[in-house]
Amino acid sequence: MHCWPNSTLSSDLSAAGHKVVAAGEGERNLTSRHRAAIHADIIGALEPMTEGSTKPVTSTVRHAGMTAVERYNAVPPPDPVQNTIP
Image (cartoon, rainbow, N blue to C red; front, side):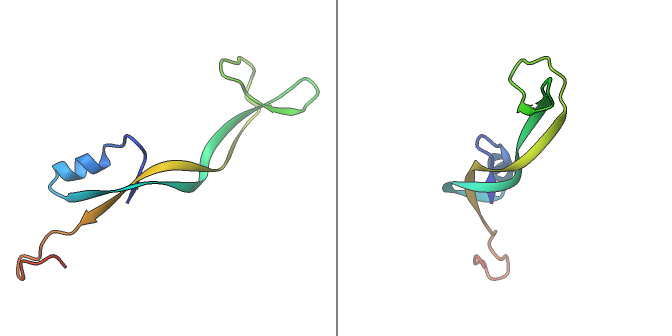
């Protein structure tokens, strides 16, 4: 499974009794990862908002982007009948 960095999902699953093993880091291309607020200037040209700006937002645009993830493998519990891992 893939989780955001600093996610508590793997530790939450471990605390619930599931065996979760870290499998390294990677990247995912998410279709709506980036969100940009756009403002139309005085002549109507669109420009991205800057942090702390008080200008009104004209629209919000979402676009794909790469993001870091942490990878984990979940180990299934042993089969109680066979006492083996499937």
